[in-house]
Length: 173
Image (cartoon, rainbow, N blue to C red; front, side, top):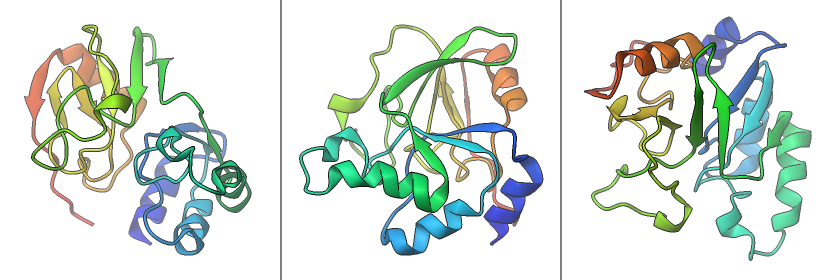
């Protein structure tokens, strides 16, 4: 409830929000209705916990997941697991669920789905509370931002500050 409230205080119905994966873990009957309460135009780049990630394309019923996310939570899936977007007046940055390297566990998983590091900043999720920024990798998961949405201004400021290592912001909900 606190996450939904915080989200809706930050995001207007007309704002576009990229959700960089791991939106739904467990039973969709529980998580999709909660996601449906989130305001904004929600674009999902699926993560490893989202049933509509390409890694699950061989599973029965895969074609139905995108419709279910859209119909029950008003979320539109982005089929490409990596896209480039404009960050304010700055340059284009790569966004993906997965970082170039690093994981929430000891070893990197899902290496076939990770972007190739070509030297550009990467905005990502996946690592949960492990870091906020690691070099040119900026973690925008709410786990790293004390339950808050990482605004485009915050991301732009991190890019402007350059490559650095920053720990997560403790939760204060």
